[in-house]
Length: 362
Image (tube, rainbow, N blue to C red; front, side, top):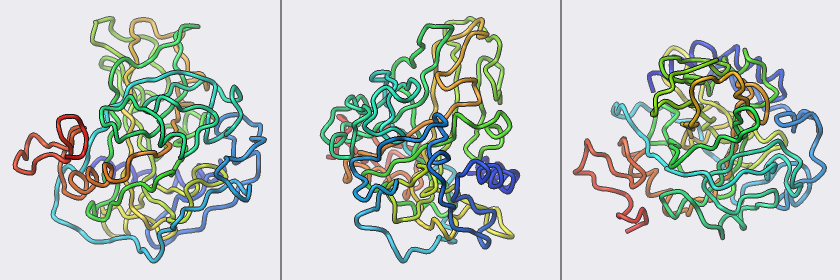
């Protein structure tokens, strides 16, 4: 939480202005000065992947307006400004591995296989351009927890023309993004969003509220672009960490630009506390990607399918088993623990685990 507060307080206003210029709403400049997200035009709503607008809406978008209503919505919630007992950690990990790559994107280009740049998919094994909440819910997963059938994806990394996939389990953190970690509730089934944009400039990537440490390799940190080289030792990989917004409007599972139904926490005036803005009052887990790509040495030909290093972004489509996700959120996030994928904190063994040895509900 300390790093999160420093990042937000230093660059919040600049980030809000930058994201507004991209047609991305939902970022407020202070807890008491919020605005409603703008309604983007058709081109801007999909500018995160190409300048062309999607020609189809999701099968779950009944009225075809580009947004998907939550059923039921969460109403009557006010951003929590409580300060619970300090706990340095309030998180759990999801460990998921790569399933496949494809030029698909079921959020931005639903029902249009091959229209997107290439993506690397993790978690749900069935994710494709036609994926819906129902299809993902019925799919298999390569996450350690069988209850995590969510779909996670990001632009594919290439070294020259060779595809570079992360090997083994990748870490996806689920954290509290707000000071009142006891107010965090599980994601609603079917929630989806895009984090960042491949159309962002290098400066916009650096100033993004989700930026943590940029591209890392060896002793090189905070890189906006890929380092030109890094040590060739066996354990050296190219890494990135990037955080997602964690405040929800409570009424939409998706929005026209796939972002404005979500917002980053803001700093409460006169404090160092992170709270949700009034336009997005529902506190959800803050996802943080921690990806490791097995490439080192000469990185001069490394690129993303979406472009340069600063075009990094990722997508999330929630298909967790509701009871499993709630158990992990309640035990680890609300409980103020630092949990592994079982929901077990080694420094607090007395608290037990949320899941059994098979990563399932006991």
